Image (tube, rainbow, N blue to C red; front, top):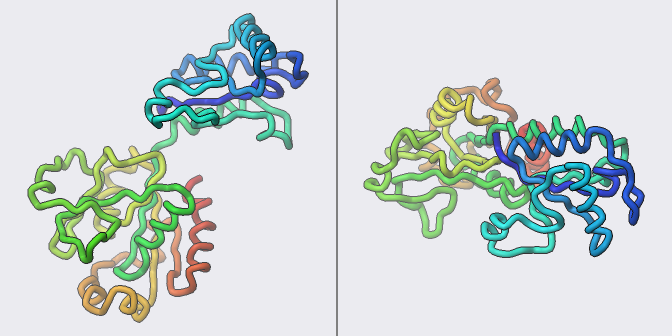
Length: 290
């Protein structure tokens, strides 16, 4: 289970909102907060209270034996990790009555939401398609627009052009030094080796991969990672225009799984405009990240 940093509002969330006075303790608030704290999660009380009002709040928390890590300040290890102590409280989850303004806060629902997040497997969105279909362009858009990092394969092939992105280029000797136990995907393509390492996997990731690598990943790591797949396709003429006839012809026959296969979570037609492609990605991400 992942240990989370949880920022919890006070007025209206832990207690009924009677600011600057302190309201009544909300049903199950103490029970759920203490359960989360005892499970190893960090609890930061995140309130607009200052001075005497803040001290009244702290006294209330102690008197009612509500457990917490900090009040209105970031955790020391987070400050060291990010290299600064910004005004915003850094957390993985924010619990605030304003988030639940359309309904009554239910602390049992909040517990379920947090435990689901804490127990969620890291998500890898694989992007599969022929050369020139736009796989890397899509992964770069998802990272730029949605903040989901593209994992870069390690490969012993040379760069196609200076400054090429999407891969970490290593020598054959460096690739030989990687242990297969540390790899989550391995494939050979065009006479060169590609892999991704476990240490590079974040909570949410995209990964440009070929069919063989996708099958290897799903067969060996479905218990560890939540693996979804985007199948990108484009017309032959479009692909030739993008990457050249030589690369397209080299890859012909490499893709044997029909694009409508259940192996793929969704499919994106990348023949049309950039706006269309981006709209399709935005739409499909909602189901990919469920």
